[in-house]
Length: 128
Image (cartoon, rainbow, N blue to C red; front, side, top):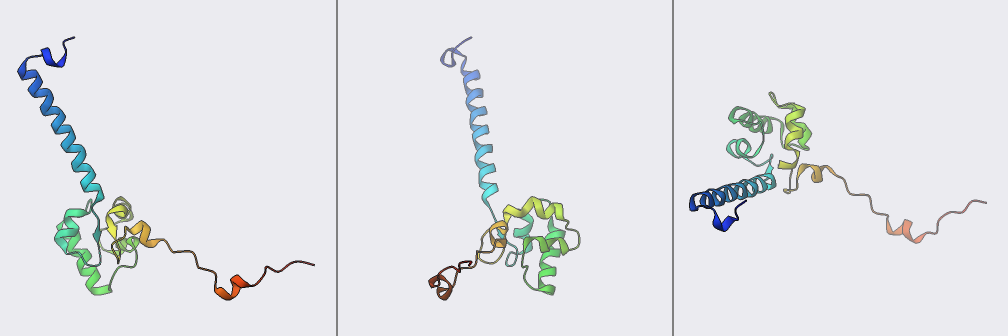
């Protein structure tokens, strides 16, 4: 088998093109996966662009639902919008932000309640 340097210029050019194409596809996929959208503030065009299986009509339905019913409290509430099912919501969980911009999976998590100072200073009860 010939080494890369001894191949014809056309083969080397094609090989470099294929490598560049693969690299650009990998980088594009990484950039797209990281994009999130706040469903309480985004316009229909942004929802259409960022969310999977959401076209212009469904994006408009999300905005209309939000105007009528107020802000979404969770990503799962999107399933109440006509034309959007739970499968679509699940596909978009990592792209949806609620409130402060955190992904919906993190926004839905509730922090553990902190122990109050009064309870922390009391010794644990012992059984007799």
